[in-house]
Length: 90
Image (cartoon, rainbow, N blue to C red; front, side, top):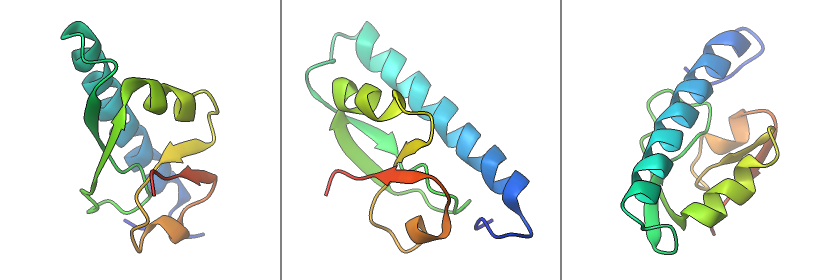
């Protein structure tokens, strides 16, 4: 579901799910001591079917997460449909 005025809650739930997946990926990378290496995270845009990957270090991911309204996202077509700030690696 792409976030629209009619579907803000669904989008927020989708984004929360992708954020939880990314947090678990971050934890796995930290446990395997890959903090300084590139890791793969999921785009946290509002498009429910977006499965684009973002390659960044755990440190870069944490830098994005320090601001609750910032989300790691690719410059995919769905990124413009969301609210809040989008941080991109490109």
